[in-house]
Length: 404
Image 1: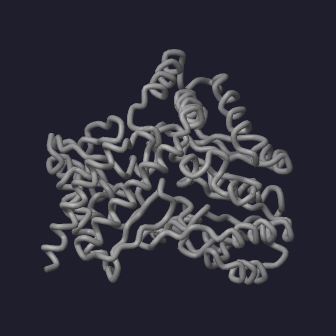
Image 2 (image 1 turned 180 degrees about the vertical axis):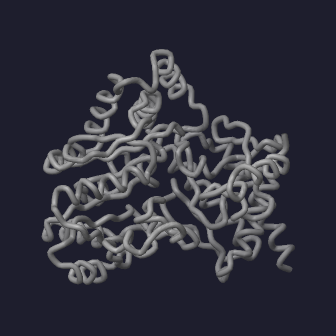
């Protein structure tokens, strides 16, 4: 079955043929919609084309597709049971591992998606404070529930009425936002760095991170770090731990279980009681297989120093792309942590150059993205990156020829 045939069939039984952030209709024309399999840092689409994968399934795959240690742990648990009348012992073991790994975590609650976790974290904050308002950076992505979805379709203004926006990395803007709803701030929710789509990424200024912590303390509000995208790729302890800034609540998902569906909220002892008051649940939230995969993933990252491996591969990729872009006469920006990279072209407001280049990369066996950040995995070796750079170099040459 070809990609084109599957798209035709899907168009009859799925709204639009596909929806959400995996909808290939949003990308350059050559991007495949349907994939057959993955192995290590490679994926194969249904037409049999092989790619070195720099999207890692949009973040969940952190050790490489079908990592043996994770697959073995998942299979062992599956042989015992997955969705049972209650959680398995693995839930306690996973919560203990998170508490041991993350300095700001005294407890953990589990769900399935990043949106579940960010929503649950705000529920805890509101239960703790009795307040309603949430300070959130303008343009930040925190999930797809009505309160945070980037698209207003199917939502009402009331569902976003309790959000007050500020400018990322601006302590003055954050203070001003708080002043507009003084006395009613339940939480400040913030990503560990600015990773809005269609824009260059922006690392956090330490003064901003510390200012957010100080403001939350002064207001008696919860500081919530949305570590869904960056968690377990920047620092196993939490992405703001290197700055000495510890949140009250952290939302986790994506890389947590190397592709198995799970999310978590971790929090401090002060919020344990409010967390107990929530009615927040789901039929599949306590399935044991994903929890076993998560435990194996975090332990493997810890035991093998997986983040350091991603940093080496990411640095190699970044340096290679800079050299290639310069040699072909392009000015590019590479932003974000090297483990969560992105490349943009100067004077490319409509992303037409990025779209052409990423499409050319695809034809040369390199899967990356023109307007969303990429992801490294611990499976990317020096040889893999070198092979990928051969493809990106050809893509730069073809893009230059296209532009004249």
